[in-house]
Each structure stands twice: as C-alpha cells, then as structure tokens.
Length: 334
View 1 (tube, rainbow, N blue to C red):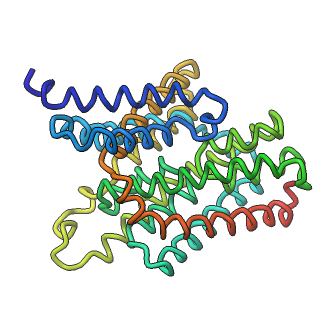
View 2: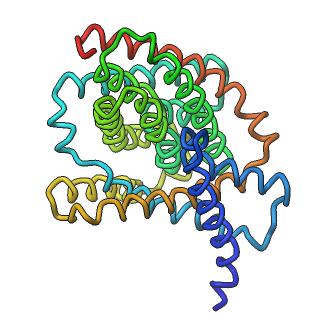
View 3: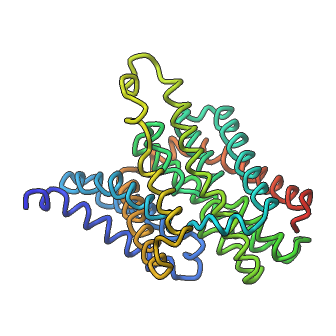
C-alpha cells in the first residue's frame, strides 16, 4: 500500500498523458507527430503549467526508467528480420549507409556547434536510427541524465515532424517511383510515425518498402547501442562510476531483450496474432516514459540546451535527405 501511495500518482499521471497522446495521434495533423512526440510535449506543458510536484516524482521517475526499458523490449515485436532479408541487399545497404552517414555528420556538427557530448550523441542517434525511441534506448548506455534525454528526444521529434511535411509536399515533383520514394523516406526520416505519414502519399507500395527500410535502421539500434556504450566507457575518466563495474554489469539487457523478442517473432515463437498487442503495449509504455521525461524538463532548459543541438540536427537532416536521395539514384533503387 505504501508503494502505491509513493509511486501511484506519478505513474497514473504518465499513463493519463500517454493515453491522451495516443488519442490525439489519430487527428490528421497530430498523426504526423506520433504518440511519443505528443506525450513528451504534454509532459513539458504539464510541467510548465503546474510545476514540479514532489508527490509525483517517484512515480514519474519509475515510468521514465523502468517502464522505458520494458517498452523497448516489447518494441522488438515490430521487427521481423525476415522482412529485411526479403527486401534485398540493395535496400539493406541503403539503410546502413544512410544510418552511418547520419551518425557521423550529425555528431560531427554537434561537436562543431559545441553541443554537450552526450546530447550530441543522442541527437545523432535519434536522427540516424529511430527518433525518440533511439534516444531513450541509448541514453542509459552513456549515462545521459533525464534533461539531456528529454531535450534530445524533443529535438529529433520536432525535426522529424518538419521534414515529414516537407517530404509530403515534395513527392509530386520528385523523379522517383513509389518504391524509390519509400526507400528514400524510410532511410532518412526520424520516427516510424514520420516514415509512415510521409510515405502514405506514394501509396501502399511506398509505405511497405519505407517501413522495411526504417525497421532495418531500428534493427541496427542494437549494435549502435553496444558501440556507443563501449566508446563512452572507454573515454570515461579514472574514478568514473563505470570504472569498477564488470562488462556483464554494463550490458544493456533491455536492448538484448529487444533483439530476443524480434528473434521470437521472426521464428514464429510468438504468434502473429499477438504482435499488434505487444506493439501497442510497447508504445503505451514508451508513451508513459516520454511523458515522464517531459515532466522533468522545463521549456527554458530546452531553449538553453536544445537550440544548438537543433541547429546541428537540422543541417544534418538536410544533408542526410540529399545523401539519401543520391543513394537511391546511385544504387538504382528508384
């Protein structure tokens, strides 16, 4: 009973905000943003209006950390590795090259713009892999605090929404087939919601291939997370909190859980009828986590920390869009 009193109010608030975000995501314009982006925004608005309420903190922190990891594990149900294999080597290479380009360019720009190293890495990973979900998945690996995580997630969320609207407007004048346009959108846009919304103007074929390319990038979340964590620990100063921990203690079990669930879906160990339920549960938990992160951030903190990261992400996203378009033409995928 005591734990319910301590954690219940905060968890209930994040659940309520996540539910409202899910409902809003069905509205025409809001569908471009997606429920995760809306949830973190609602959290920030709540914080701006009602302030930092002490009675909610334990539950909010639980949603932002524990439920986050559970959501990432369940998100693996969305990824069927066989779909990536069937799409062909060219599509796989396009996704890998787009991701590598985005990581290198966006992170390089954040260093050029003197963005904090952790926030810069989160912005780069969010742009390169799968938006806010990648940010919150990699944050524990580099020991980013809640403010850095929320600012990074909000940055890529806003960028993805802007670029989705631009892509939708450009489709009519692009010299690409629906398949080529889908590969371009799936390889360069930020969130899965952004990819689906942008590809929809190209029809069902564009959406199908866009989602496969996007999920290929999602699959690469696992190696990128492991590499980012290893690089962070290698650069940690002597006496850092990671210093005395064993390799097993630093393994991101929730990322490995993501891969395990994905493997079970691919092998048919999880019935296909369960997949939509697992994915919906994943997004609910991630929505609660995003709301929790938003509740920990003030708008002035975003202005203070986020503007240089946003500028780097904006330029990097423009370059990624151009490079991704060129890649589709060079690999004759359009």
